[in-house]
Image (tube, rainbow, N blue to C red; front, top):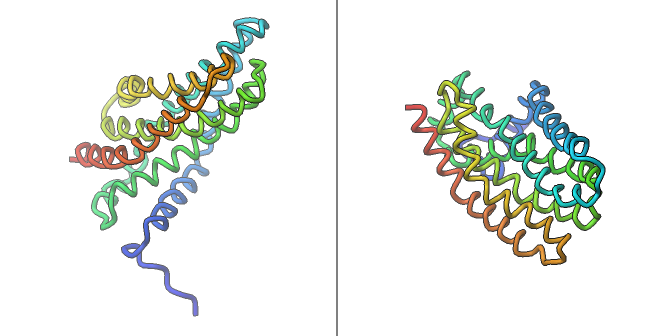
Length: 234
């Protein structure tokens, strides 16, 4: 006889995260256009800058980090409004609020799924797009490291904005207004790490600051997002 499925109430923290992430990834595969929209927007924005600026390699190298990071930030904004919207419309979010499991853990799973769908593809595409700006191999590696540390923070901060504006008319615009100012430190440290390579300075301070932001965001944003969801659902 086959073993009975585990009781959802007894799921461990890793098991619960896998369950939420797997569910969101499976649902996203049914709406591939939403995922591709973010990636195509990122590729188009980054690719158009070399065409508009010109072939001067020195200028392209100087602006490469800023262009890639700004494009990544704007691309991540496109999918924030959909993070909780589908669950809100079909009633799943209400069930999450009533579930015996911690809402913060459920929210963390949704944030991880959002990053895997919108942030991770940008990280994988960034080195290819960075070649258009004649970036060195070291600068490309630093760019990848900074994006790996910074893009999860963008998803976590964006989750708070998405939860606060859930169900509001024009919520997509409000999310951008709330989230963009909070993402400026990530943008500054991310671009600063890549620029430090060209200036011969150490990249460690910038990456360490991004890591500190990631730790702080991981500790607080799931709880804050869960609280914002409860407020929005009342």
